[in-house]
Length: 104
Image (cartoon, rainbow, N blue to C red; front, top):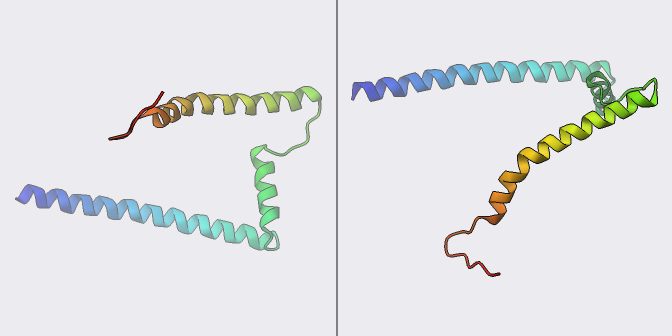
């Protein structure tokens, strides 16, 4: 009985610590977003544009080869995501439920 109470208390402490860390990160993120919006004149579209420029999604390319390399990189990322997600989707679509009638 004491072991079960210890596990329960330990899990509550763990959830409290994880919740506290999550709350601290959430407060930090909200304050960073508010600060950024105040410096951009409260324009969400300007913040979005600055973010996309910072991560490299929007930018000026010097040559056509630079642009093509960027596009091919994005294409490869999409292909890898598709190859990872398709088997799970295929299994989900083709599983027969309880009492389901499969017709061919």
